[in-house]
Length: 520
Ligand code: C2E
Ligand code: CA
Ligand code: CA
Image 1 (cartoon, rainbow, N blue to C red):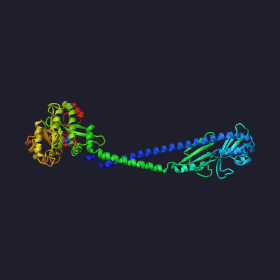
Image 2 (image 1 turned 90 degrees about the vertical axis):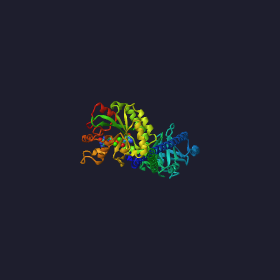
Image 3 (image 1 turned 180 degrees about the vertical axis):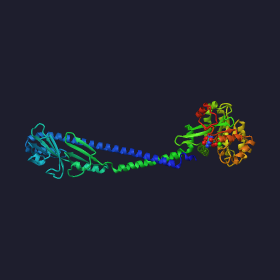
Image 4 (image 1 turned 45 degrees about the vertical axis):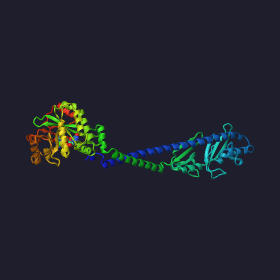
């Protein structure tokens, strides 16, 4: 019954699956972000390394070229050998050409010549201080693309140096082959690119993808483009794997915690600690005067997730888990806490009906518990009535002794739910009870087609013969109250007089001086 409220296998399973899914999403999302961040960082480093390498290279090259500018004042014969050796010692330089008045007149590779530069390289504008182009090849190496660089002499009129540079992208080809997300790079001048994508020159606009990083070499009309895959499949797989694993582990952990760690037994102890139990008091009134003579204390559990759990569910469960004793201790503490206020609402000698579970009755600590409870209440004010069901009287010897002890200690005993158990009326003769509580099942039958049940008749007759005081519970209508009164039932309890109320409401009801003859 208890398990209806929480910790049912299906609920736990559903909650665990939900938790697993949420954890999977979070872990997958984090993993995705982490991979993305790492990837971005890698590209940033790559482009900045490449950029600084090229800046350094061209700085050095421009210094060499500037030191060559004075050679343009000489004839080719005079400077050819120096030009050749300077080219040989300049990294990646294919050839230096000395240019005067637009004509290349000396080459480090072929010596003397006399060709207008525009004829050699139409893309270069000699009127500019600096110009650059990417060429598909040079006369000596027609199939090997090269970078062409024109630098006009800053001091000497109409003179300058034209340089062709070898570009070897093989290391980058190798690098991109080893990386899963880096696909290639390109050096771009005027929409012409030397790239790892083709041996020929291409227009990068025709690559069909835009570079994920770009950088400009300062002072040169040259850009570096880095290309990357949008989001590599490997990363997706990794993200999925991490998400799934985390979700599985998280889900299983939740399942474990909910089934093993938060076993309902523990929940009861936790609920005691967290003060989730509270008590309500249901007035018991004198059937003639309709004045309050006492209350029955009923326990309530307000569970933060499952809501209000009815006592039928948790009392049975606590009994099964051997937790009824700590639960009843807690009940006693709650009553003791309320007692000073109850004292202001109830007349001296008022009955305090407390339900005692059969297993507590036979627990070792029972007698001590009762003494402590009694001591925790105001002196000589309340009359504690223990409400015990037939189930608590199975062991005749023990029960007799216990009841005698209770009477000696000043407690009264009521037999609760009488007639609903399978045991017989024999208990009434065996034991001395102070009260007999007529179960609400019989009371609710009053006023239906058969006026009374034979069992109720027998109970009433016996109780009268044995001089027991009768309390009818579950009185919901005036008709029932009248009938019970006419049968000599001394006390009434039920919704018609009052529902079980928390202390605060009991106080309010008392302040309103309500008489218990209308339903509230
Ligand atoms: P019970 O001892 O027979 O308590 C009377 C029950 O009848 C209460 O239900 C009360 O709310 C309900 N009741 C009172 N008047 C009427 C009425 O006019 N009409 C209807 N339909 N019901 C009425 P509740 O509070 O749900 O308690 C159910 C049972 O749980 C109790 O039955 C008792 O056996 C057990 N219980 C409750 N509190 C405790 C406790 O502190 N300790 C132990 N051991 N058992 C408790
Ligand atoms: Ca009761
Ligand atoms: Ca009852």
